[in-house]
Image (tube, rainbow, N blue to C red; front, side, top):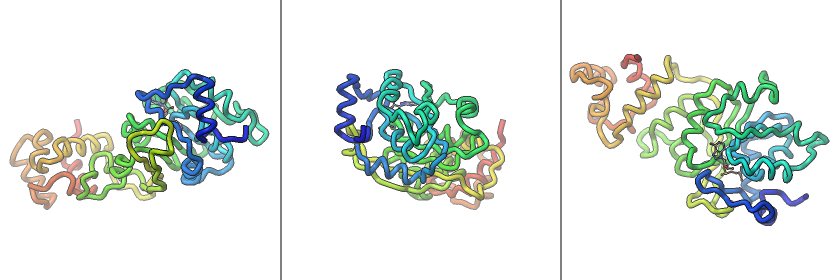
Length: 292
Ligand code: SAM
């Protein structure tokens, strides 16, 4: 079949043939725009032999183009009606290899993934791994957290997400989008906006527009001793975004004098709001709050 899965005609045919009903609660919006799909493949800079984790292959629109670009794909999916469709509709052979040698699907929630265990046997674990996905938008942030905090060292994450979340990833101090997600990601990764995609590129259309973001690990990461503790402190500092730093610190440091000491040490106005603090200042705050 020469018509790509990610085209309106072929997607409609698949939907009719298998009585597919896009499941809203699973964030199913299938890509039907080759420009967008090839844009993602290009943003991920897929080369022959690349090992790619795909989250949510759906009916295979993006998977197909990843495979044709030469990738070996391991996919996480939760909808158990999809493996049959993917098996039938993806190309039977790619570069002379059977589909099974190039594509493996696991019916598992990506948020519960054990990457090391899941991938061993299919991927060469000594070689780089990329993540590419048109994410299910109802869990975009938890997925990014799981990937950012994972022990696997990904070379890049190329993720399509709702535009509003992409803005949070990119945000600078002082922006209203700046928050725990921004800080968690920017202390680990470089954020690049690769592509904007209109909602007309999907079937069914999501209510929001989308962006493709490429995240790559930072070469020089800021020194953070205990990341779990750091993220927790940042989240606490933002627990009431509209309130001052001094107010937000009350749960972390109940003692008024101790709190005043820290704020003095940071050399900031106690009335400053968390969104105006730099990443370095959050690191300094975390350093001064004991972990238990
Ligand atoms: N990749 C396809 C495309 O681009 O047309 C489908 C993308 S669709 C936006 C998101 C996909 O993620 C759906 O296939 C959905 O079933 C799947 N999904 C939803 N929750 C998931 C989870 N927790 N783990 C893995 N996949 C999930």
